[in-house]
Image (cartoon, rainbow, N blue to C red; front, side, top):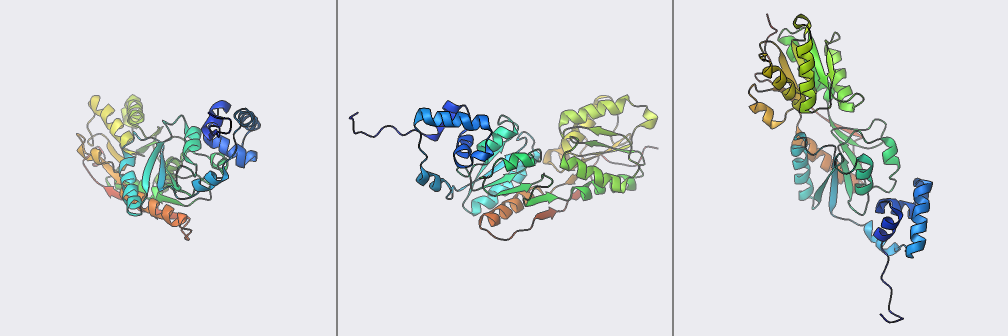
Length: 336
């Protein structure tokens, strides 16, 4: 290299590597230092001095232009519930000329790490957030994020548009179905305490059933349903709920499997209703009665809402879709 040859340009990733932080944190430390912790800000400043990095404002402005990508952040890609939602999103976005990228907040090193990686305007033109465990503080720490729309789950108090199901109405459908079959001891299998889906579905049950029987706290998984099944089996048979409303199909399936391994007949001894309408529960040994969410419609509506927000159009704060009860073999009259 000659003396007058230009030196190799230092990149943002070089600064991030030296400071031991993400590139998004470096970007915020340089453009909005008040949004970064003092320790991170100091580390970035030392790294900038050591590497000789200079912010390229032209490149920064280019990153604010259209990327052609939309990111959907999902709390658990292993859950089949999200497949048709993402399919609906992909169809709508593809027709508008966008690619759909998917980030798993459970597998991306935690929610904070996932937000740091994906809620960055250099990566996407917009975000569809399906993880209600993200907090307001998480979002406030990302002032330069692209437009965000929430779907399925939501964050109470967040001034963001959302596309959701009428969860309380769906739980009410399950309750009325069990009541119509003669059940009076009706229990539930819920999600994590504080989760918005758990709270809204439990509220819908309680409106229809002021005298709910036992409840089991879960996490929407098959394993949580199996644990609830073991607890149900441990109860005095005379005091067991004869009808169970599970707040997800996976929990309902896990519950039924645990009972059937113990020789309990469904629905002769207990009726079970799920929630979500996942395809495979129609093919269980005892096909599951469930509250179906219009998953593809939900995905398409969320995508249309985000695209309208990107274009600067006026959009509703909340769009609510309606559930449907699918009656199958897992529910029947109250025993006796």
